[in-house]
Length: 134
Picture 1 (cartoon, rainbow, N blue to C red):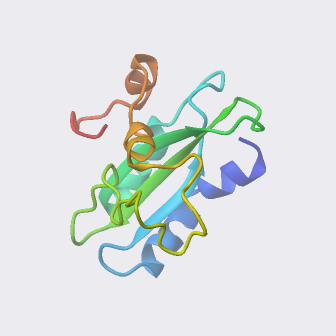
Picture 2: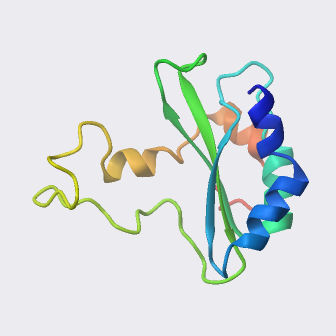
């Protein structure tokens, strides 16, 4: 959405990011909101798969102050060890807060996994040859 979305989905930008990452390196970038009229992300997914050659997923979360109330994310990894974005690498332990000063108010392991659950119309808009993509 807007000028930054055009830059973040340009082939040249994505190639530069992929080149700068080591094997199995990860990029997370804002993507189109699934609630935006004319939601189109299939081309971006295809481009990311072509450039990054590793794991590629679309996720989303709610942001009440955002125009559509939600924002999407492209998560991509370079060729190397497979990355399963749906499972947190460092799951939260409710008894320990890590570097946080207290328990999180919103994010938890279930919210993380739910970010990859898409409504039927979004699945259709993001379909490709890989049935396990989402």
